[in-house]
Length: 482
Image (cartoon, rainbow, N blue to C red; front, side, top):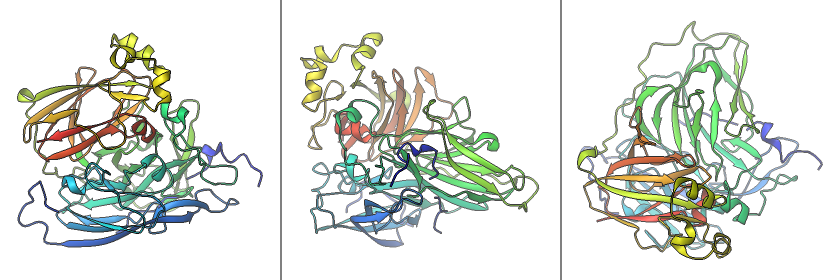
């Protein structure tokens, strides 16, 4: 097969609409009266990641499909999910963004023994928060996620806002060869020390998408999930003026995207819920474009308007979501903690510019020498090794805490905290407009971000960059809540 397929970021990625252990947190007595049982089987499979004439690709997947089966429940349900491991290596499942008991968090060696080949582990937890979440391995995640092991987990509100239709788009990119095989170069030094594993083919819900049919006047709730190892998306919806109604599953005051150009920026592991009013003319086609890398803009998917409108003007329906039961941090009385991220290529230059002590003075030896022994990224001067970690911070349980984070590197980092959601309260000293709740916050190079939360979920919780190659290269630590 001859083609210029690998640079195929201009090719289109499918989308489908959404389908219709001792708890440390307490649930309202009226909740958890509905038990929902699921089975996920992690195994090798085949999927058509590239459009014809390319054939199917070898993948790893849940339930034989990429993404894995969408798990959809109602807020207050109790989930029981049996995970069967049919891979030739150990695995786990992490329920990203969910406030689960520590033993159910899916971090190998920290919260559970990894699931051995041929074995099954059953996760059980309550759906405290409505919202858009997802699931993926935390064992060698830079390869297991990169080969297709992930899926959407949607927790529906008791009283969702009115829409004409809902879509769930799981975004991903893949590094494919000319034969549409997934490239085997996982964990390479360049990816780990730079921006992570960036692919050459973008998909939505595991396929290069056809045009999405829409109708003038239609209102769509679009749930975006970024399952890519490293790719940050900046989606340009042009004149549609999307309204952000939730970030990382947590409701926020409806607002236009905070990017000054109106783009929807979504880092790895992050989720954004949008309300989209289809305001184009009947028969028109509009392209949603990714513009994060200025020299690599590409069309993600087309919206194709039917000839017959649904209505003449957008509906006048309320967009706001009810808040989830999150404890509000007391900023004035919060304990404060400093976290600084360093390392990576050009890291020493950034540290000098910011007046931060060099890695050499903190760790001894040269950066290149430490890179070759696997220490590439550092959290407060320490590079993590595996998941067997002493806590870097011990947080008093049920107290409010502020984590002041400094990105003293040359690259973006989506920083994720397990077991909790947090308010993003400031960026570079300026208060955020909405004080949004998130579980993964994207930090730009040289940026300082403050987050605040109540540490109400006891246990040892991972805290790491969700560019999976950065995590594997050391940008990971543990917060102990006790």
